[in-house]
Amino acid sequence: MNHRLYIEQPPFAPWLGFCEALFACQTVALYDDVQFEDGGFQNRNRIKTPDGVKWLTVPVVKSHGQLVKDVRIADTFDPQGLLRRMRLAYGRSSHLDEVLQVLAPALGAGHRWLLDLNLDLATDLVAALGAPARLTLTSRLQIEPTTDRTGRISRICRAAGADELWAGSGTRGYLDPADLAADGIVVTWNEYLPRHPTYQQTWPQQGFTPNLSVLDTASAIGWAGTSALLRSGLATYLDSLQQEGQPA
Image (cartoon, rainbow, N blue to C red):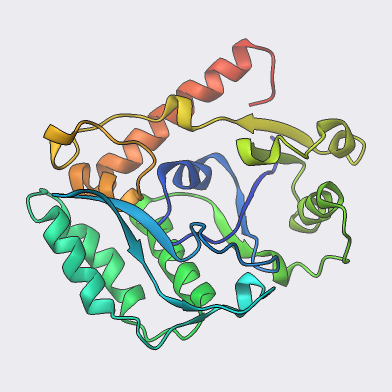
């Protein structure tokens, strides 16, 4: 069996695609020693509210060229205000209380650094979902520096002991599987959004909205239901890969 690895900049309250990787892979590497992406998903994610889809945001202190691991949470951060927004958005949901039991401890831990908050929350998500993946930080893998993105991914895989990369669609623009194959690493493409599952969301009159935070899913069907949804979708996808003759 291959040791499968997924790499992503540490997200805040991530979407289902990230959470599926927690089941698909033995290791999920949080890419914390690359430049912080302003306007990305490292300090915010989307939820559904009575007024439509809104951002749930952790304010940060921005500095040009800063690495993800060096991003500080702004003094204006109001954890209780964020939890109130969740209650207003999902007060009608059957499983809001169990979601807040996972979300509140990380928010209230007094973290000064965004990475610490995201890692704390991701660790709690792994436990809540019952996922098998081990979380690690790329900054802890002692990778030799290189400006070649594919070369760096290869080094991360080797340092983590992985021989298969669970690659999201965002890497298609630059990642050449042949380059990784030369280093003994198989690439398995994961196009998650086209197979994003549906479930009974809050505010159904707005229609179903994919690509929201896992907090939306768990509020609707609970952590156990979310785990079952992810496991079922992953099993179906891996079966389809096998039928196509791809590694799974």
